[in-house]
Amino acid sequence: MVEFGQYIAVPAAGQMLGDLGAEVIKVESISGDAARYVGWAGDAYGPMFSAYNRGKRSVVLDLRSEVDRQQALALACSADVVLQNARPGTMERQGLGAARLMAMAPRLVYGQVSGFGQQGTASMRPGFDIAAQAESGMMSLNGDADRDPTRVGFTVVDVMASQVLSNGVLAALVRRGVTGRGGLVDVSLIDVAVSAMANAWTEYHLTGRMPRRQGNIQPNAAPAADVVRTADGMIVVSAYTQDHFAKLCTAIGKPELALDPRFLESAGRVENRPALMDVLSHAMSHMTSGQVCDMLTSAGVVAGAIRTMAEVKAGQAGVSSDLFVEVTAPDRIPIRVPSLPMSLCGVERRAGRLPALGEHTQEVLSTLNC
Image (cartoon, rainbow, N blue to C red; front, side):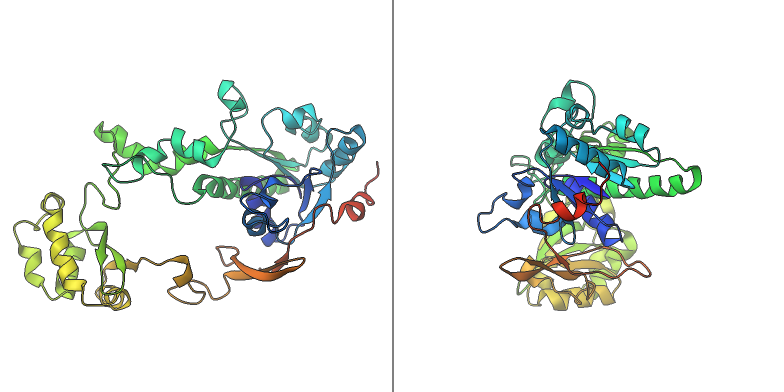
């Protein structure tokens, strides 16, 4: 697989496919993937690059050079999969667009990611995660009702786009096994972001009401994603069905609460949410988050301790013991990052080394006939 990728969406897809067994050749410019240096000055392996490029081989090609373009073409045509997230039209101008490559190599699966599609005036806009969060309606739903819209706290659209691209590539490879022909997998950040909110879109069209920011709460159910303070932190609890609410009341030693006229039905619990939360907070404030979660879990109620990243541990609270793998880089102590979020028979989560810029250029290009 040959990856012409920068930042997150395509490199993360390449990383996932590499974790599943693909050999990934990463083509970089003379200055390298910008992710090497984003928000980082310590070395050429910044956090964004370290997260999504372990185990790849790095080849430096200057696509402004005719000689290097020919080498890139030969490399791409020798691959099963090509991935790219250049600005629409860029790969075509360099002779590496989908139509040309698939004509030259009919079995090729060509995957591409853009911000706002490949055609039309919007396609020329820079395609960053934050723009997709804003334009898709995602930010309009995120945050407190009386505050400005808020982005999700990490590049969620980029990450989702990488997974959509990976799924599309795998599907195209399966189809190729039947038909003998590859195909184009075209993903845009804006489509991924809009599609991710299918439930909100469905509610909007069914009710005609515009969804509004509600912070952590669910506007039509309680308690649902509500935050409750404990003796040592906070938990989130969800018990909005009649059965689960009754279990919650019994678990906290207040079974009569389920028969309180204010809380008897879901609509009443929503209307009287502040009073309900006061009761729940008082009942749980003398217990630790772990104790509350254990108690509610035993009662069949959904609850989760709100943890910092420092408190998330492999092998604890359901996190797979081998989820984090070691990533090494020259002249740097190893770090541990999350690997494949799935378990697949015959596939192990593997440690990996980050490639130096252009480290494998001669090794890879020497195998090409061009």
